[in-house]
Image 1 (cartoon, one colour):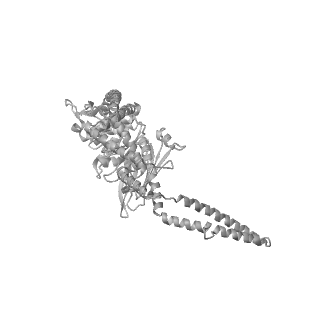
Image 2 (image 1 turned 45 degrees about the vertical axis):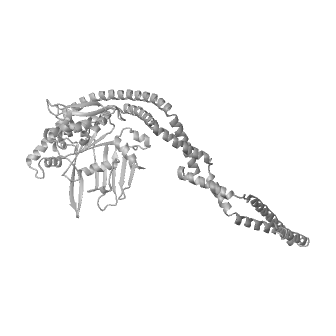
Image 3 (image 1 turned 60 degrees about the horizontal axis):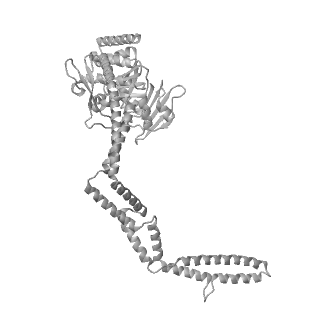
Amino acid sequence: MISLLHIENIALIEQADISFDAGFNILTGETGAGKSIVIDAIGAVIGERTSRDLIRTGAKSALVSGVFTKLPNLPWFEENGIGPDENGELLLTREIQPDGRNLCRVGGRPCTVTQLKALGAQLVNIHGQHDGQQLLDEGCHLDYLDRFGALQKECSEFRAAYERAASIRKEMESLQMDEAERQRRIDALQFQIQELERAELKPGEDEQLAQRRDLLRNAGKLMDAVETAYTALLGDEENMGASSMLADVENALRDGGRISDQLSELADKASEVRYAADDLGELVRDVRCTFEFSPGELDELEGRLDIIYRLKKKYGDTVEAMLDYLDQCRKELDGIECAADRIAQLEGLMKKAMDAAVKKGETLTSARKKAAEALQKRVASELSQLDMPKIRFEVEFAPKGNGMDQTGMDEVRFLMSANVGENLKPIAKVASGGELARIMLALKNVLAENDDVTTLIFDEVDTGVSGRAAQKVGEKMASIAGHAQVLCVTHLPQIAAMADTHFSVEKGERGGRTYTKVVGLDGEARCRELARLTSGDHVTSAALESAGELLSAAKQFKIASNSN
């Protein structure tokens, strides 16, 4: 459960600390006072979608933190290696920046919004005033039924079988084509394969040829440079080279070295330089030998590169890409030529896959129908407690028009009859606003029984409800609060009177700014708030007396409920 909510600079709330209790918590206040801002703040701290527009005007950022206690061993804790502290408390924090960035922490450790949202889904269920629209959407009914029946395993097994069959069908469709189209494709592939094979391409060939071409284009300059260097180093018939001259230098110094140690040292250095010149000469000679160009080689290279260039325009930017394309063409041609055999093979696999999918689908349908019977009984029981004992609720099954899809073989929708003697019809056609709110509450309560979530939030889900129906809704929420923490935003005194903890959300002005504050109520203050909900700002003694009676009746209901 959430025990403490801290809010800074969220919309009209500059700062607020709200200590929630276990059981039934109520927030009331004038329309526009900011009750739903508190719910938005809780949504933010559990990873729900937010907007930077939530940041209070003039503030640099907004911050929400929540302390959660009495937590079960949630799967999220093991998956992420984070859990409650030694006191059993878990702190969630989210800071919203003006640039849209969110800084999230769980137990003091940074996390992503996605991680926070996954954890939040295991901590809190928020039911808004627009949830009733989901009940009208028949596309949601199947999901409601599967959640109630805890049919995740059956759904997963069917989906795997269905996707296997769908994969085989897709491959079959890719192989099936009419004979004319098949022959055209074979001709095209054979032409492309022959053209690429005739070229006898080799990986990296284009780069090697381009380098050789550049060499040939500059052959004259290169030969001149090498010949000049070679002659300078080793000489020719007419001139001595540097190597011979250095030999003379060494000999002269060596002769003088018999007299002077200094010249002997210079002779050694001259010897080193001569050896280096000899080595350089040998290297230049080797290079000169590689510069042997045959007549017409440049023309041959240009022709080969032209062939590769034209092929690149059709089959790929590099030789490697063209070779990959050639391999793809060969495989596709083999596939087409062997398509009849493969299709026959796939047809056999398809039959087995469809049989498996149908079997899994029938198992899922059977489980759904069993769950539907239980759901009908549970919803009927809940509606009876919500002062709707004569409403009939039924889950209708029909086969899917296309046989099956990834959700199964069933079309499911919820039907109801609001009055005795009336036929069952889709909920959207017969439910009033108040009936819709109570049916939604009944479903939410039934579905919550299969969840480990310990906190349920109802944000003005009592729209269209009044009088005796409002009292029943309040009693139902109080009953739910017996096994889970409940937070509720309401305008109805009958519901507010059932709360264990009551907060008033109040709006005021200070220094030319609008502020919202959250105040805990008890005793006379709570009685006056219930009277205001009944009669408006003009609170009469009769309204106060009526509020007292509501509180007394709520107390008696709780005593009776606890004794049962």
